[in-house]
Image 1 (tube, protein in one colour):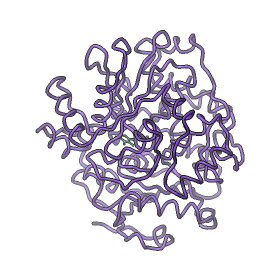
Image 2 (tube, helix red, strand yellow):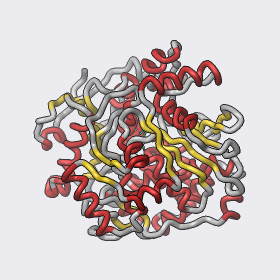
Image 3 (cartoon, helix red, strand yellow):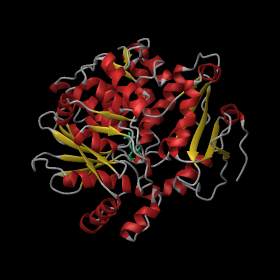
Image 4 (cartoon, protein in one colour):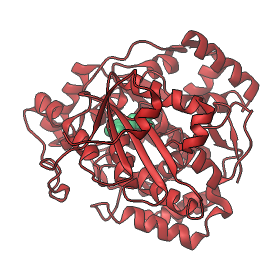
Length: 464
Ligand SMILES: *Cc1c(COP(=O)(O)O)cnc(C)c1O
């Protein structure tokens, strides 16, 4: 299996190289040259398999010969051993046609653990013979950072520098990041917004000598391996509800378009997906793009679902590439327009192609809170604000009543206790296994956004 860049100007790579590279050298994103299809019989045979075995079957064609299958199975077994539910991704029925897919049973209580627990082990394996360490830099609004730090702490040949906007992540998220005392982890609190953090990271990647000297890599969802790992739970959940013999719809709380793009890949592999319902919060660039063709950047509004407070959805480029018939020249021109003007109007044929599978909804703050309350009052379910945007979208959709609908529960409600308390009057409890990190000492470096990049990398953290 070979991977190519959406912008056509970077070398084709195998799974190992694509995992370590993150972003393509031409500024594009790596996608598989062909998405391998599974037959109806192969999907049917997965209905009785456990999570790890399902993952082995889904991932093997993409991994190719970069990892022997027995090693892949061992790696996945190790990655999911830390999850606190035997099903790893349990389905919970809400009503006659709606299920919640609980993706928050990993070590940091959000779905990002699924991919990052695997990515941590992939890095360790692929770097075993490397002569110098990889430096993972990332900007986070909370969930990616905590998942990455828990996946990479103490691992050989990887160091992590994670930037978060100071005071703009939840206290649970901040502590999950900053109480991990491992020598290879640096937390940097930036006085600014998530976009400021992102801009610093982008600048580091665009500084070619610096990038080479530090051996930079990325773990945000532009990394193909992350998306691949997420394809698994779409398949796992769908075959439990009758796929491939009936089509399933998914409602997906969306920020960077990574999670829902994994659902798109599952569909391209042959999983019968009736619809992918894209939920945004008030930061609605994807809803505008999919509903009206208007992919234009506005300022980010802070919401109670901060992991979706994003204006530029990096992975949308992967969908555009596919909808343009994998025409890299066309995609390059579109992205050049977008990068120059912060705005792109999608052509009618691209919009029509997207509309065959995607529906998009925007859940504003009152709707998100009302959905948390309705889930609690009517279904006795405490859900987090991100999950609530997805459920709001599911309830607003015009999906036929006989199509099973799976709403992705992307975070545990206790990760966002203030928003949940405000909406339903109940403070969700952290699972017992979470231990004492809410009382432990934090360590983070604080900086202003103007700090030179080299100092960011070298700064020694001190306690706060
Ligand atoms: C990251 C995140 C999202 C958005 O996922 P994308 O892959 O960026 O679309 C939604 N919910 C939660 C809880 C998250 O952490």
